Image 1: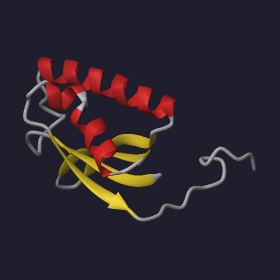
Image 2: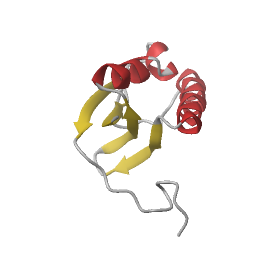
Image 3: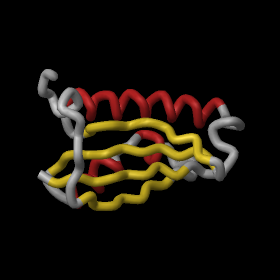
Length: 106
């Protein structure tokens, strides 16, 4: 297995503060999609980041390789909606998880 960081870049720096109804509907589908990936064990963590220069989304994936990471990212409903979102995918050579996050009891 391999780890990948996905960054969801919104269509403008002011997103989500000025999101349209269409964008919010797509984001609801986006959230449902990534909840499924988390339940399946492929997404380790997914969520928004409110950075000083604008919000973006992150996901850390545990998948077979770069092609699998790209396929998961490309299937994100918010990308498929054609609203100007894009993803950046980066490999992560290793990760450190706290034991409870790795499925071990403390």
